[in-house]
Image (cartoon, rainbow, N blue to C red; front, side, top):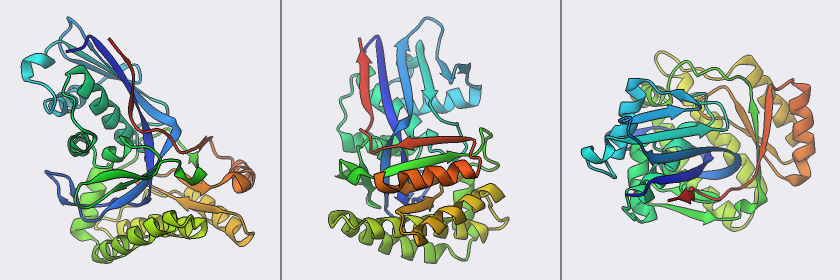
Length: 317
């Protein structure tokens, strides 16, 4: 066992969305997905030995007993109960937590990466991915760099490490937590949305098309598939009982404004996760136009990100 290990993991944003578990216990998705690991927004987690029992803090605050228990339970994939008695976990997110910026994905990826070294398990990347998705499904993608595929079979891999020099711009609209968790919203969609079977069929086809578009470097198709996947996911949520509506009037205004840029010949495609924030897939040539639109709409916080390295160790002792 190490004395201290610090790991960092990037937020990843799905271009082809993951939405719905076929097996909730084993976190087996109904479809594969494809994401971009991004810079600037990430989680840094330090595991160290202490004499204060098991402790977990997030963003400088001691976590609730419920959250601490969740983390401790996850760490049992790496250690025996007695090895967890005097362990300190300190995590920091650079973006909002629990508001649709994939902080749980980067959080569990950083925790798993650090635990793998701290408890000297030396699990392979694929074994680590199998464990990590049990904490948060999409967390397995944050272990890998650039454009990442999570197959329905559970296999996770980088399809293009340089990320094709794509840029993901985050339009962060609020620091408030979302009204319903992704986990619950996902379950409601699977159980009650009449559009969910169509979502499965579409996503299965879109993933094949996206892999091909990346292979031939067809940016227009990549953008169109990204936008379509996000809109289809939210459409499936709107039809749930009760309906799940994450998008606010400001979110919708931004989506329309970004789509207007496409009519002007710009590479700018909106995407949204389970939250109110809007992300924009763009490139260097169109970035200035995207930023101008976001500023005109008085976006609270804008973060420009680029393809990033997957989860990795910063320090160990």
